[in-house]
Length: 151
Image 1 (spheres, helix red, strand yellow):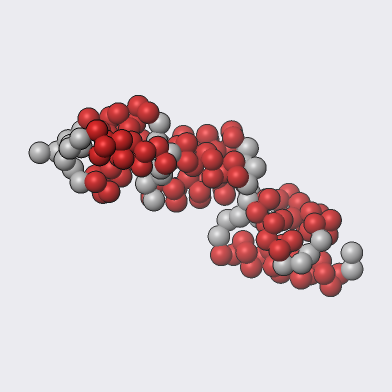
Image 2 (spheres, one colour):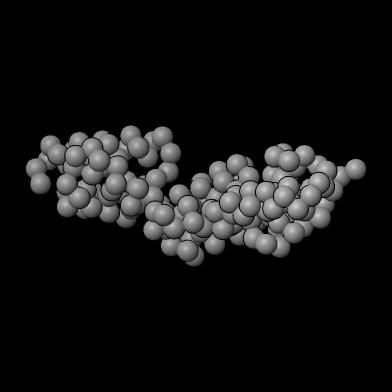
């Protein structure tokens, strides 16, 4: 590879990483969408990874923090990170570092969407359960969220 395409690839990676963290495979996908050959991109992205400029661990931390702020549960966060081939141990480590109270987050998300009252009937309860499952909460979080009713 000549210096010119390499330089353009490096500039593209630098611009992308300056905006936000990116996963390794996400960078490769975006570069290939810009028309660069994967064979040309892999060595450059590997250099960034080796130098510590690109880090899947930092990406996982960013994704977890962002997801928690959006009201997403642990299952959803793990699935989002798995989409970019982030190692599960990195995701679990990021989840442990953030230490969210999943039960309270599920309550907060439910109250924001459906209000603080109890479900009026089975149809409403099913709707709330589906919503919280879609958001990535586990069954025990959902059961707790449904049991908490503010008066």
